[in-house]
Structure formats: structure tokens, C-alpha cells
Image (cartoon, rainbow, N blue to C red; front, side, top):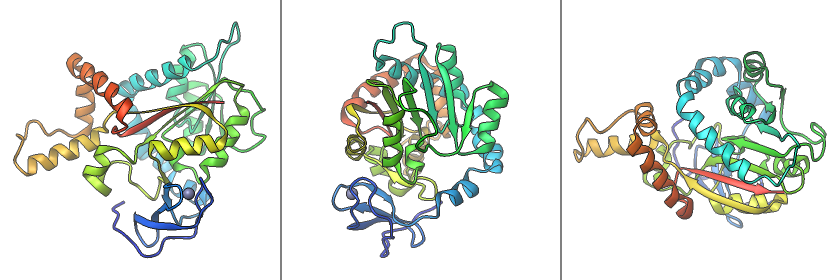
Length: 313
Ligand SMILES: [Zn+2]
């Protein structure tokens, strides 16, 4: 959706992090204003439909089959590399388990590709997914157990998981603080939660403004920086919080290249569509090394497009 802004009306939803209501418009539309809390800096949609309405309209079978799954299958090979990186990060954050088989819950498990890979690494896996279509795909194709719905108290027993993952999920949730508090309760002592979410403080977001990939107020209800994500995790009861930024979305890189091409500063042959860019970075040894090097820098300066967070109970 294209966004315009700023807007005068700032909505009727209080800040999920500090409970404040003193918000200023950031961007968005009159119907879906996106606001910034003046007290803690959290950025979120100030007015939105009920979550069940969003689920029914955005995460239905038609969306899953026509948009979500084809994209996921197209990117599977390159995205599997990233999934492996995320699982290794989780595994490094595990306490010593002895002979215990680790249990992983993926909140927003989608088609189940992360859990499919985790299972090959000896995890016992469980999915949770609001989209019935995605959950049934995962159960039928991969025989992975998935509960359909939102995370709520009592759904899983206290201290029943060694790790929880939320990849590109927290920005979609209506009440991330409550969800994170439930995650704390279902994790075993000393065990980690991994979060991946778009970085509202990324360089590309500053360069591209509201055209940056992931600025979608209809779907993304929250826009985190490393500072607001850290505060949210602390408020939920997590400790030992590690946050790094990494990667540039190929869509953002492609948009920046196209802008440069338009101003005739680079040749046509260098500007590429996002899918081709991503594939190039994973197929070429030199570009893979460049990505690794770039990510080492982005881990420290938080200018990358994604925030990757490991937080312990
Ligand atoms: Zn606030």
C-alpha cells in the first residue's frame, strides 16, 4: 500500500511498551495513521481493525496460495541459508541440555520451512500459525504439528520449550508485549527467544523513506529500532539481550540502484530486480564473503535492514 503523511489524526491505541497516549504522527493515512510514542519512541499504527479482521482479510487461503507460498518456494534455496544461520544462533544460545532432546516452538511458523530444517538438526518441533491454510500445508506436506491461532496463556505448558523463534512475526502482532510475556512463561530457565524483524532505524529506511521494503501499515503494526525492541524485551522479563542488525533487503538494494540508474550514475546492466540480486549474493563466493563482512559491521552499527535478536529467560 502506498502511504502518505504526515497526518493530523493520530489514532486511539495506547503505546504497547509504556502505556502512554502522548503520540505524534509519523506517517500513514487518515485510516491507518502510524505514530511515535513521545515517551518511549515506539512506532506503531495508531488505529487499526481488530486482529481477527486482519487475519481474515490478509492471512487467508487466497493470500497464502497466490502470494505467500509462491514467493516462499521461489526463495526457498536462498532463504534456507538464512534459516540455517538463525538456527545456529539459537543453538549457540542454548544452555547445556545433557541428553535432553531440545524442543522448539516457531511462532508464526508459516509453511514450516524453518521447522523442517530444525527437525533435521535433531530438534523436536512445534508450529503455531494464525493462517489455517499455512498450518494445514505444513502439517500435510511436512508432518509437523501446528496449532492454529494466536499465542495465549495455557495453550502450551509453562517451561515446555528450549527455544522459541519469531521470524518476521512480532511486527504483525496486535499486542507484542503480552505475547513476549507468554513466551517467557513457556521457555525453560536460561533458554532463548530469537526474533527477526525489519529495522526501522536502517540506512535504507532513511534513504528510501516510506518506499522502503516493509513499510506496510496494513500488515506491519509495529516498527522497531534496536532501542525500542530492547526495551520491549526487558519489559517482558528477558535478560541477556543481544541485538544485531544484518543484511540489506534485495528490494531496497534494487530500489536504490534503480534510483541511481534513473539519475544515470550507473549503467543499466548493474540495476537488477530483487530476486536476481538475492540469488547473485548467494551463488557468488565473492559476494557471499562480502555479505559476511558487511554483516559483521552491521551487527555493531545497527544500520542493516533486519534486526536479529537473541534474548534469554
Ligand atoms: Zn511508549
